[in-house]
Amino acid sequence: MATNFSTRIRVLGASLRAFLVLTVLLGILYPLSMTGVAQALFKDKADGSSVSLKGKDVGSTLIGQSFDLVDAQGNARKFDADGKEVLATADGKGYTYLQGGGALTDEQATGVSTQPDPKWFQPRPSASNYDGLASGASNYGPENPAFVKIIRDRKTQVATFNGVSEDRVPVDAITASGSGLDPHISKAYARLQVERVAKERGLDPAKVRALVDKHVDDRNIGFLGQERVNVLELNLALAKLAG
Image (cartoon, rainbow, N blue to C red; front, top):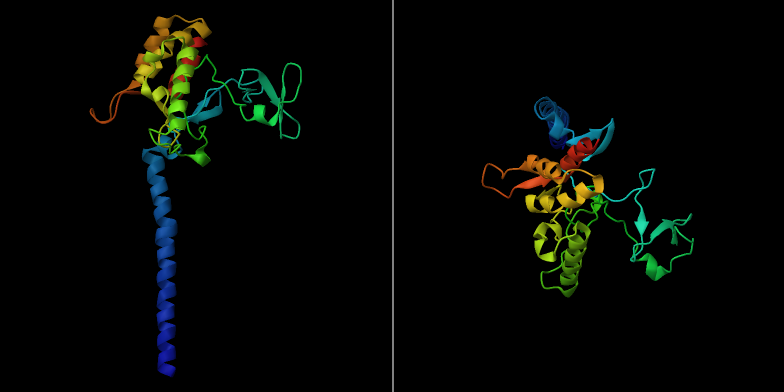
């Protein structure tokens, strides 16, 4: 009986020692060493590829974001389905119209959303509204009537917003990525937006088009994927061009 007890104590001691050694090796030393290597060799990527403008973080080149109309404080402006601007009520449970102050009905409130800022290049749609905590797709099937309507509405909206015919609207301008956080758009979609951005900013369209061409990334290792444009990087370059 005493032998069995002492054996169990030895096994328990060995298990505890193995637990402590593996915890130190795999839970402390290994993560620290990987962090050190990443910081030394790939600091930008290890830190999330964040981008700053005038000392303020404005996003990451790895994660897509919206470029919507904002107020003087940088808060997103909201509009009803007819394009009339609204404000959230003090209790945050409803909306009132900016002009007139009338309250929106519950049905009208369901159509409240932000609007893209015409002065910026716009990203592709996002099923999660570029919310990193809700990353994902809509999961609609290609023949789902609701999805077909969404695609048709998006095509009309993109064409109207950019002042072009619907047959010029590229696929990525009306379809969301699987993650909903794609930071890139196609070269075709970036070029489609040149005239609108140039007009809104009073810039020479040729200069804006050259800026787009300068920010076109080639296919990975020459043949994987498609040529693409990082929207955040392009808009930061646009901000410098526009002064």
